[in-house]
Amino acid sequence: MLQDIKAAIFDLDGTLVDSMWVWEKIDIDYLQLKGHEIPEGIRDDIAHLSFEETAIYFKNRFNIEESIEEIMETWHNMALDEYRTSVKLKAGAREFLALLKAKNIKIGLATSNSSTLLEIALKNNGIYEFFDVITTTNEVSRGKDFPDVYLLTAERLKVDPHQCIVFEDILPAVLGAKAAGMKVVGVFDKAAQHQWSEILSIADKTIKDYNELDLAV
Picture 1 (spheres, rainbow, N blue to C red):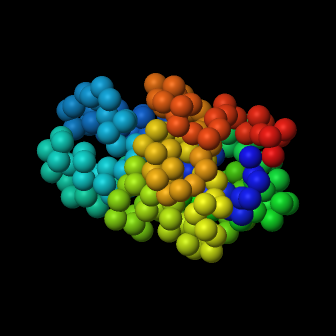
Picture 2 (cartoon, rainbow, N blue to C red; picture 1 turned 135 degrees about the vertical axis):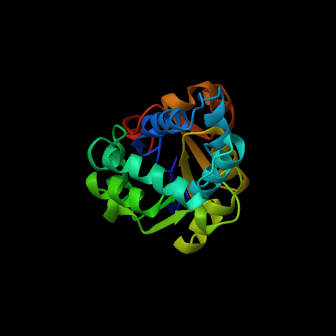
């Protein structure tokens, strides 16, 4: 799987850490505060968007009075305690990162999350130092259904995109990484299980957790 690979690029939420439940809860709680029920299929609409793009989506769709900045601040504060205390790594993730480091494969993060929350998640789980580069979708003009964030991460890692492998949990991001010319591993997450059959058909490899990679590397 790692033949001719010089860099591995990971998504954070739902891929490295088990955290999608936090955002599902925030969506429900926040919309209830605004007098709305959570619409069916909303996670698929927003999963590939940046933090700011998601706030814009909510403001426009639900006619929210607060500014984009105020919406993001509210969500950030709602998520903060959970990221400090409850967001944990997917099984085998730390060991696999250590294996990549031992093989001198560069490691990047490409995430839609905020810098504050991603740092809390990485540091609290003892993996922050593994990453050579951290890129967020706020730094590019399009979301993860496009190749932009993966190409920028590869550029910062100084590695050709065709020598990168990407780990992602949602279908739009798998497609975006494939469009970047990168090999893609689909990582199962319950929040995206309805997309799993399509991920199985598109990704170069799929796993339920990182322990499955012990014999594959």
